[in-house]
Length: 409
Image (cartoon, rainbow, N blue to C red):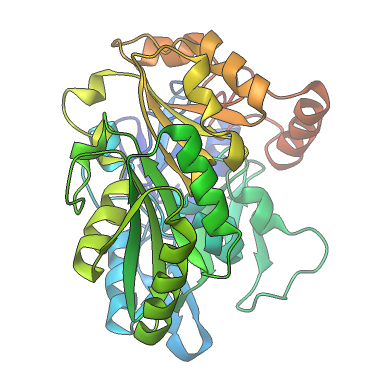
């Protein structure tokens, strides 16, 4: 094995060394934790591994064709490096990946491309552009069998047989260690503005967001920020309950849609506007979940709950009123910070989600708590059986991130 070895860590320098490392782990029955810069290490069950396979050495953009809207990079390439390169060409990652650094107490701007794909990240623009998997075109990866696989390519319609890209996105490193990734990039909007409706309760806000999403205004962000968290968001003129809707595109189009949307929403409450500078500040705060990223807030368990948008407000009624929360994705994503350190109240959260329909992920909690409760949503028996077969196909010996998502998986 030629990759650099440190205490409890293997750090390959290229894809071949990743393959060698996995084969060595197989031969020595050493389960591996797959990591980049480790910014999401504390999401999921505590590691049940002997060694860390550190992929941060696999960094660098290997192909970028702005005219073709395609970029390839090694899995350990920081997203900040990719976004800086795209900015020079007035392009962006349209799925707007969240940076979990602030809410998990780690460094900002350290997340990698491989981590974004493995966790299937997305931000507020998810309602328009989709998640990471929707921009994932091709991959080279090493399975738990120690075999290198390739899937996809440099164009959207290039799938033969199984679409392994979609399978690996959101697998949290439990199926394969990705080494090279190709993604779709898109032009950046010329400008943006935000329409703001103040004073709405959660239910009325969800109705307002549904009306906006059902309009022709092409909304690219829809969130409701209740009064108890509003002061933590940059860009808001006043710390009061605010329902915010982002419009992006060419300036004349944004101006026209802003007028149309404000006319539609005036029946819900007082309407005002945020200019481009204020809007960018606000949506960055929403993307990074800033109310729950303070040092005090980081002591409390944090849930990420996905539900049907029109029913998002029902979550608030079903859990303790002492919890703090706000809504993204037009009410379909609910961030909930529980009131007491170390107590996630998983039974109440799971019960509330079951009644509405959806799933909940425990994003932040002490290791002992994450070992004792389901971090990811419990699977139905048929889905669990299918997942087991997929895991066995890619990683029959359970050498890659064993137990990261569910106990015994």
